[in-house]
Length: 264
Image (cartoon, rainbow, N blue to C red; front, side, top):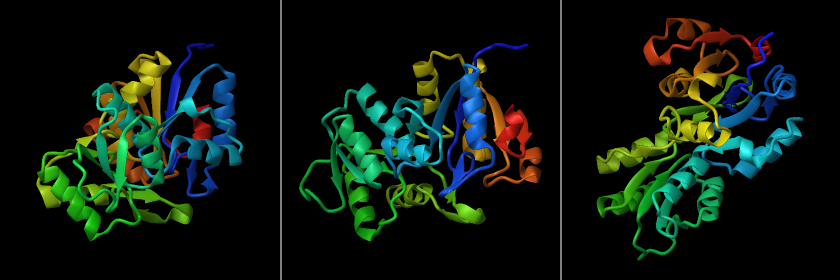
C-alpha cells in the first residue's frame, strides 16, 4: 500500500462547485484525502472574494477549511507586495471588495474608483470588477502611463456558474487596461507559477509530490505542468474530454477524470 503523503491543490470554480452548486463527490473526496494524511489546499484565480469568504462558502457546503489552506490570486498579490518591500505604498485597484481586504490586510494603501484624485499611485492592480467602467479604465491608464506598475491578479477570460453558464472573467478587465496602455502586466495567478510555488513553500512540499486538480487547461493544467506537479483535469468545469485529449505540451494533463470520485 502506498503511504506517501501528497499535497492536493484544487481549483474551486468548476471543480469543487459551480456558483452555489457543489460538484459531485467533492465533500466526500476531500474528507477521505484528509483522513489519509494528505495535505489539501485550494487555489482560485478569482480575485473578487477574500479568503475568509471562501472559508464561509466551503463551510456551508460541508467542507470545513482553515483560512491558511486557501490561496487566491488577491492574497498571492498581497504576498508579492510584501516580498517586494512595498507595504504602505499606494495601489489603485480595479477589482472588488475581496481584493481590497487582502491588500489592506497586508498593509497596502488601497484607492478605489475616483477616491483621492490627486494621490500618487505606485501600483495598479486589476482583477474581476463587475462595476468596471470607462472612468476606472481612464484612471488606471493614467496611473500606469505615469509610472505605476501594472499587476494583474489573473487573466481568466471567463468563470463558470451553475447549469453550465459562463460569465466574463477578470481577464477582460486586464485586456482593457493592457490595450489602453500598451503595457504588459506582471501576472500573479495561474498559469504563472508564483502563487503555486508559495503553496509548495507553505506546505514544505516538493513539486513532484503535489497534484494540481483543475478544470481549465490554460490555467490549472498549465500552472501544474510548469511547476513540475502532477496534473489532473476534471470534466465538471469548462473543458470537454475532446479538448483535454487533444491538448499538447504544457496544456496536456497527466490524467483526465469525469468526477472527483476517480481521484480515490
